[in-house]
Length: 509
Image (spheres, helix red, strand yellow):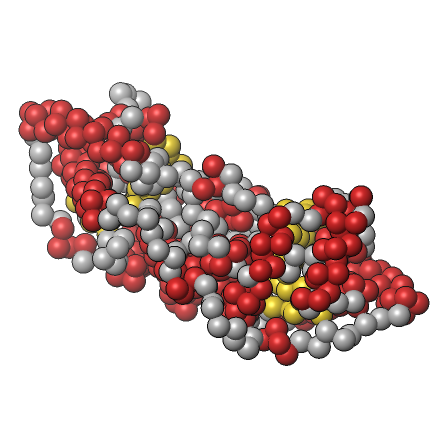
């Protein structure tokens, strides 16, 4: 693969100067157009050590308007990053719509480096490539333009550059000393090339293609990188214009698939809502499981095992009461409750999962989501805030997200608090008549109740498409609040204790 681009391209200083002015002008123009079209752009700068990736990154900062450009470097990991799933650090830095982000290093860096030095086997490496494919597909479908650049030089050229740096020893204009990792990679050049070729072949796609750039001549390298970026950005602007021009200027008709006019039997119809606990039994059972949960949470903290609990359910289903019984068992330093409401303007400027990646806990800590990313396939589906194409592809995106959590070791448990329509109506009316509960009932709650069948169908699809052994859905009968609260605390206790037992078994070998 790489031998095919080792062609000795050269650009003279005069040729570079003549081409640079037009290139910079067009780049600034298309940057403004992308901002107006709300297209986020991610430029990945990857390649061989010594190929000038840092120089290219600096050149892009000089050519583009820095008011709409941010550069992120990825090499050593912080403690925060090590204690979360690998892609967390990249989600934190994804650009808003209309902005450009240059990633110097990227989601490719870690798996390639680990594979080159033998710290990652082939199976894990290929799984990492599949994760990257999923990530890039998800972002691209959401509208992100991903431009992947690979800068290449031959082994002979790499040796010459490192020898020159060593001779200069940091003296002279723009001189620096070779870094330790440059020498380490130079010794592994052939292995690095082979692993990089495998990564490129595994992740080259029509939506997110790789661009291999010969970097022997610096001026050729920089011009080629600029032209690749310009072509990709201009093509996206043209495509955005075509889509806008092709959209008829009429009021859209509600898509039939976003509403379910005929009630269909779902998994919720199989739930036994008669389950109940007498007060004395409730107090004893709740206290028992709260003690066990509190101890398990502290042990999980000591072992670096994080947990995520997701609470979804009908309006007045008892989510708040259940969450309070869970948190009552924990030390306040170890957990945080994340209430999810309508997205802010900043959140709307990113992929919908961005705001949830922000709250992924560090190893050892507990996060409780009061509503969650499942709003995409529930309220956004039923209310028409997401198109059928958007919410349908979200099942795959959500399972991809949760799989990254569980593979990192996070204990993920998801609750749907279910109740009957009759019990919901009773609770609504009680809230209207009780002064300190009046704030809990809104006009939106009544509107949602009118769409019960549509929501029930959406819940059934959600559970079917996104449950797994690692991140199961637990449907909790909620007509009796006492029974529901004990079931929630008991389930979280059991899940965490099982994870601790598994950790102990693995530690023994």
